[in-house]
Image (cartoon, rainbow, N blue to C red):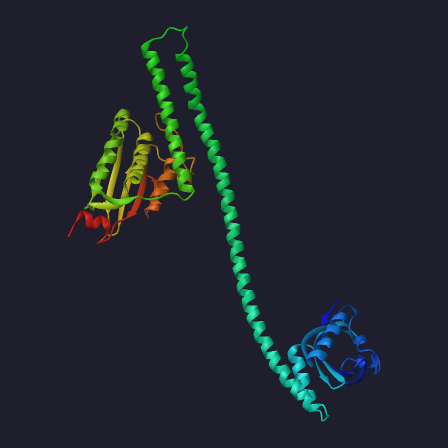
Length: 412
């Protein structure tokens, strides 16, 4: 194993035939192993001798070489050292030390020698120090750039992992959606086929009331499938990032009255009263996508009716602060079972249960409602009411002075 040595160095002169001429300094007893007249290659590990040849070729071609790392065969084993060299007429001075800075220090020490090579060594030292400084500057720049690129690569790798994870989740969710949709469509389709075959049976005795009841069931099953397909298309567009809001000034009192009126027939059919109340003064207009917010409110009120008992009450309570509007939809049903609240707004969640009279939902309505509310900059949540029932709370930002909704409702 090649290791770093600890702080010493050596200097030697070799002739034009790459043989050792004499040792100027040796701190490793190399002068006992390689003597004058021996090839200088004997100092180096055999595996790096081709690199030594390139090192000496550079000295002969340029007159100087520095910052070469070569492996030396020290008595304690091979060690990687830093080398510099200079050509002096027909001789080559080779200096090896622990690091680039150690090589410089060894050069400085040799300059103190009173030899006829001192002036040339000083020139070498000056060139070497300038080159070493330039090399250090380049190394710092290279290190900084490599660090930046490495950090950028790490960020990209994390993003790629997250995106792959998200894609895997979406793929799993897609398969789950398809499985649930196929499951939910199978029963009504089977009912429709069966009842149609029954109606087409010419050998049985038909009564108008029986046939009408079968047609009602077919219609009910068809309406459920149509609602499921509509919700699947909606959630598909939303999950793929294609939820676009057509914001416009919406007159709030008329909007609230309209969604309550739309749900009155379903409430009356079940014997559930739907009330609307306002806590304090409400703004005249809000900046919403009318159809999508209507979809949210119809879903919340429809759910409240579905989970209410006959003679129960659904209350739509609206209040406004300085910057936010709060809409509460409360029912008097049985409340939400434990473990349902945290999954309630996920597609096909455990919250997709039958109503108090067996009414079935698509399991996608609340997931769609959450995404629409969040696209408007708001939040939606649910909680059980201590006295019984469930409360859904929608918080939405209000338009500030000078906004489109404000200016159209209250023209200057």
